[in-house]
Length: 221
Image (cartoon, rainbow, N blue to C red; front, top):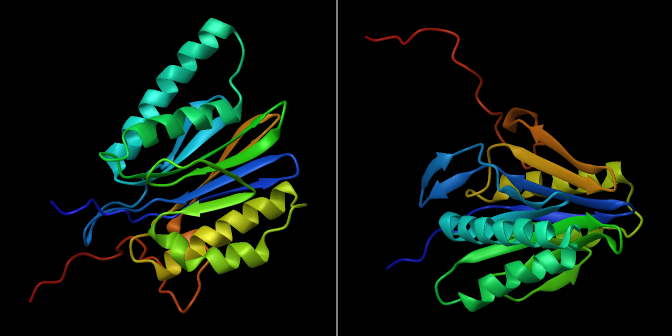
């Protein structure tokens, strides 16, 4: 049969003190938008999160399995798992099921040993430790922006602005990305969530504003 649609934009970067993750909210099935405010950022541990793109059920099942394993291992060891260990669990499941799963994933988080870390795990199950990572259909449009705009010495505010603008740029060009923007910042203090309504997201390339609620009744005639 036809391969599942993989429309999404997910993005993460390291900054001096932690990581910032971002994703759009649109879920589409072909040309039909089934959800405009989906949360594609799943917690795997207290300070480790998974960004999901690709086939929604495939990415969800990886997220659920890894979260289950992480909580069991942390309960046995009485210690929080490192970001790298969690990322390798994601990679193992993605790689061992590469003929059946279509999941393009990003793992990002913070631990006391190596601080903020970002790992890309694209379709097929490769694992790559990066300063920033993007995936999903919208990522095609923002590789140049990310490469030019990212700096190693980002502050938290600069990193959040970088991710927000990157996702918004992708939404302006990719029909399969849109809706809201969700950001999660993870540092030594924990995870901090931010929701940006579609009407408040930055606009580019003469985009139309998001329609507001109707003010009048329907006119028939």
